[in-house]
Structure formats: C-alpha cells, structure tokens
Length: 420
Image 1: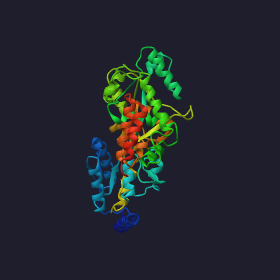
Image 2 (image 1 turned 90 degrees about the vertical axis):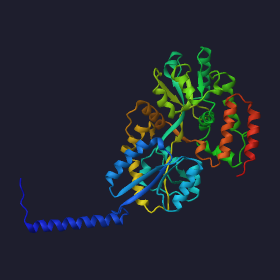
Image 3 (image 1 turned 180 degrees about the vertical axis):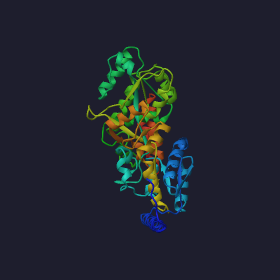
Image 4 (image 1 turned 60 degrees about the vertical axis):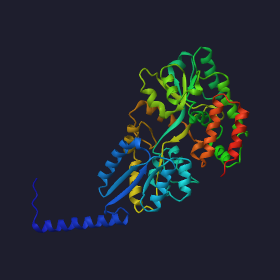
C-alpha cells in the first residue's frame, strides 16, 4: 500500500531522526562507546593463529565501524615482555596476549593488567579458563582455548585384552603389566624433550591435592624440598614405570613426534603427551580409534581430573586510552560464535560455554574436560624460570632411568643455589 507524506511531515520526521541520532550519539559517548574513530593496539606471539584472528577482527570491525583493531605478532620471551612494558607505559598498547603462569603473574604484579572480574563475559567461560588468569581472587584474563595433559590409548588394543581406562594407580599398573605380559609395548613418550616427563608429575600430583601448583610454588619459595612428601613418593612411583620396563625401547632418545608416530602406527598401546597432539594423531593415515585419560595416583578412585593447559590469556593494559573499546573487543571475542571460528581454525578446545564443535576429535576432548575436575598445573603459578628449568630436568632424568635419591639430591642443591 502506498503512503503519501506532506512536506511538513517529512520535515518533522527528519527532525525526529536527527534528534534520535544525537541522543544515541550522546548516550554512546556517556557509556564510553564514542562514535569517534578508535584504534586498538593488540599484540600477541600467536602468529600461527593469524588466520583465526583475521576473521574475528573483520567481524568485529564490521559490527563496530568506529573501532579498528591493529594486531601485531611478536616472538615470546623477555623481548616480548619488554614490548608490553614499553608500549603500555607509553600509552601505545591496549590489548595483549600473555602466557598463563610466571608471565601473567609478573605482568599483574607490575600493574600491567586491568581487573576484569566483573565483566559479563567472564561468566561464559569454563572454570579452568578463569583460573588461568586469576591471581589472589581477581581475574585479569581468561584463556582463549585449552588443552590438557593426557594418555592417548588405543581402543582396539584395550578391547582385545579386556582393558578400560584406569581410575586408580593399581589399575594403571595392571594395564601396563597385562600388555607387557601379552607382548604388547605399553607406552611411548617423547622423553628427549623436557616437558613430556613433567606430564607424569602433573597428572599424578593432580590426584593428590586439589591444586598441585601449591607444591610447585613451595619448592620455588624454598618452603619444601624435593625429598619431602608427597613429592618423594610420586617421583618413586614415576621411576617404577621405567624399572618395570613399560616403555618402548630407546624411549630416552624419542621425541614427541616419534612417540606420536609409534602410537598412530599401532606399535604401542599408549602415548603420554597432551591433547594438542590429538589432531596430528587423528590425521595420520591408518591411525587407530583412540580415547584419553589422566594417570590416576591418589584421591577418589571415581574422580577423574584434567590438568589445565591454556594456550594464552588476553589482558588489557590499565593505562590504555581505549579501555571501553578493548573491553568491547574482549567481550566480542569471547562469544560462542567467535570462539567457534578460533577453535575450528586452530584445532583447539573452546573455553566459552556453548561453543559449537564440528570436529569429532575436539568434541571428544571437550567432553572429557567438561566432565572432569580441572586442576591448575604447577607451571601456571611458577614465577621463577630457573626453578622451572631445574624441575623439568629432574623429572626427565628420573624417567630416563636416573637413580631417584641421587637425582633429587643433586637437583635440590641446584635449586637452593638460585637467587630469588
């Protein structure tokens, strides 16, 4: 139906529209969402994720045409920390990625992170994602994606010998002994790389206490030694796996890629690594159907855990001139729609509740993480890199056959000599 407007009505409508636009503009300015053009400075070391970031930023800028997000990629390490400090203090940094653990702790301690505890998007996150950026009860960042230490197990081999994922240490030992007795190599692990051995420590200590990071911090602070309990008992148990011959021959020289290849080829029944390796295994031609579990040790036999291993958190520099715009971008990025883009492109497990997952392997990992108790891994709270390096060396030396008492005594002496 046609409608005919008089000139007077057109003028009135025009004035009303003008008034509404001014009102909206004023309201947005009042709320900190100025229509003035803004450019967010965003830095991260995650260059491998650039395709995902490009898609998210394009969607954000389309919805917020007055805000431009300028993302730059730098390598990690002390140089990266220096860039955060220099640019932040100089008012040239708004938003940045940080590694949970010592880096986040140091940046928060220096006053370089805005408290976002009261932001609504924090409530959208799974508990482990919040824990990764929470210090002394305040949240400064949330993890964009996550993974966990795990044991990959070959479902066909387990079924053949009537085995199921263990819930106690004795059950785990029985699995290894049954496989060995049947002529099947129980496990592979990339022990030529230091972080693989600490996965055993994390999973086993995670069952000993609600937060195994307290032990790590107490060692770092000199309040505990490597000879104290429960550390000594856990390390002796780790060593027993080597003594019983449960690993593939030559495991001390095997790296993470070699271990994953042996598992994917069906030459071992289990591979101890992390869920970040799942895509590689699943993508190998002829790879078996597999599941995951965490090595149990102490605690409730019916309780399974996951060791939180977030890839990065994002934080806002408190001196930013664009805090409202940075919060708007953070909120946008932590929606199920944008999280789906990020995790689909990067092959990681989402931390935003309700995020759709199309990849069956990622869904399997997500289901495991969602159904188990999150434990904050000790490296996420360790502020001292020298202590961290020596502890990694400790676990590795144990898992390649070193004498427990000798290794612990020597490493404790090195840790005691570190200035802190």
